[in-house]
Image 1 (cartoon, rainbow over the protein chains, first blue to last red):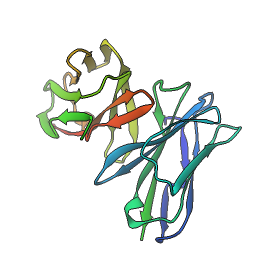
Image 2 (image 1 turned 120 degrees about the horizontal axis):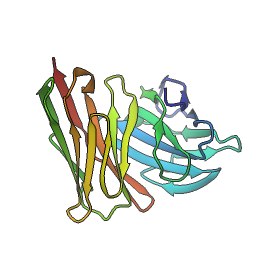
Image 3 (image 1 turned 60 degrees about the vertical axis):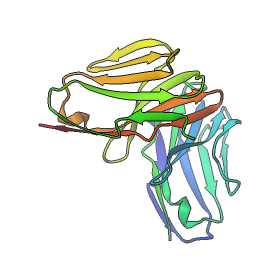
Image 4 (image 1 turned 90 degrees about the horizontal axis):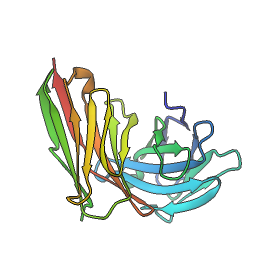
Length: 112
Length: 107
């Protein structure tokens, strides 16, 4: 158990819908990272937050947004969902920026 | 263009064999990570290194900055080592992943 929790574990929704994925980092970790893992593109870095502030953006679509709250949990919002958004979404946390990351169990999203 | 290349893509070994997985990258990096993804999907960070060599149990990771190359070695492999091993590099504020090496260790 990494100490990072993600909810929900599974999510099935329809095209055009909006969903919110939640991540709680390990106690004491200030950095949260979001990643997408799809069958055709592998793992991709989406976004990094540190202590509530956005620090880096990767291949995150404009339909996606994220935020980190004062209690350090983070949410990834996916809107206008498309079939191609079906993937595993991982969050990870670290004590500071770009240190050893601890991964959550992931949220498996299926868009029908 | 893939900034991170791994080889081999698939690897089958007999229990006890010495295993090497290679990772080459094309950018000047800040750090390189080796990750392990279990069949159930969970990801564990094995190593983060920016120079030299690190060892943890039966796992050894090395990096050659000049040659832009890293290797992950597993000594005395065991069936529980069966997993996908992923190399990832940090370049500035970006993080790039290799496509992974799927390892199967047969008893």
